Length: 65
Image (cartoon, rainbow, N blue to C red; front, side):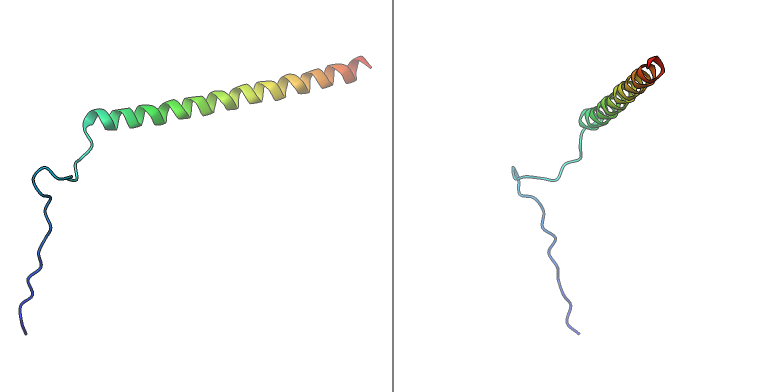
């Protein structure tokens, strides 16, 4: 059985290399994700407040009638 030689490609000098994200990039991604979650939660709270205010207004109109 003949031996098979497999070449593992390596990046050339000055060529694009796979690099790990730096600590700053990782922190920025986490910060952006947290920011999106906060905005989503805020939007949900504002929406709930609007629905509650509308419901109370409808109840007040019905009671006043």
